[in-house]
Image 1 (cartoon, rainbow, N blue to C red):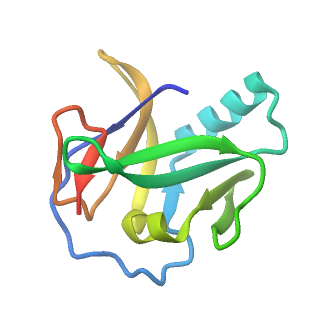
Image 2: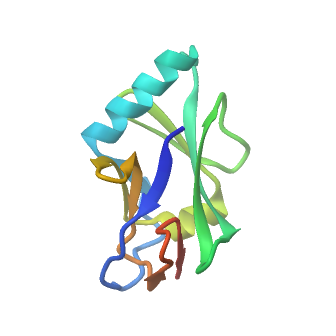
Length: 128
């Protein structure tokens, strides 16, 4: 997949963990996910979105193709794209929007996290 970046945002109060869908994709991100799945022949797949320890700021985002949800996942569909989020990641992804941007330094998925307190210089990790 293309590069994943995150833009620094103003800190906000943590989102309500009870929100049904912890993460959402913009129309452009949906278009690019569908395009990538078509190119790879992954017709019945979805996207796993997660957070894991690491990166300069403590947490980093992950995104990958996934055939089926795992036990305990928050699984939902947005405009024909299946998304799977594990319970731990769900806590950190509440209110996150994933966009696809094209700029002078390339193109890729950008995570906009209103709950991130800080982000690192590379933009792919954050603290909560």
